[in-house]
Image (cartoon, rainbow, N blue to C red; front, top):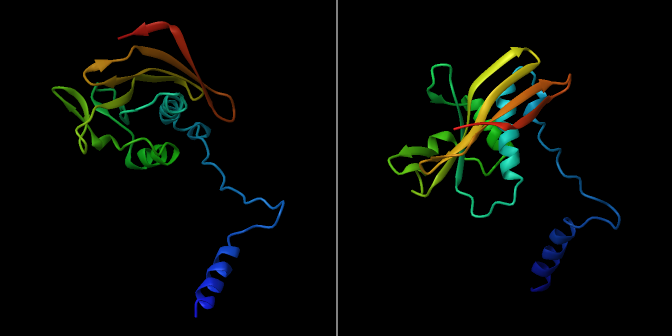
Length: 168
């Protein structure tokens, strides 16, 4: 009777094995949000987050992303935009999870420190040229804000960070 479960296990296991030299294709990576000409602000947020998540920072706090509107109020990506960012960066938490308290930004689920990447004073001179200030806020402190310039190159948004112009 032990032969039947053993045989069945081997058959199931063999279904997972590929022939020598055969490779299993990974699904295509998600297309960059920078490929969407009509949403340069979201593309800039993607650019900033990619730089952070590709770095060698260890013990990262909860990370959220938002931007300031024309009224100076902190808001952020729409639900669909936030979902697209989280699909690209699974380490990113929904903005609703980051709470600004008297002690600074905290993860509302864990009570631990949180970091919020922000964009402010976003403006486009044309359909192909935009700029904004960007940085992050964490535990009551602010990073320096850097001026980002974005240009649509016909296929995607390309951003540069001007290291000479810094604001707090």
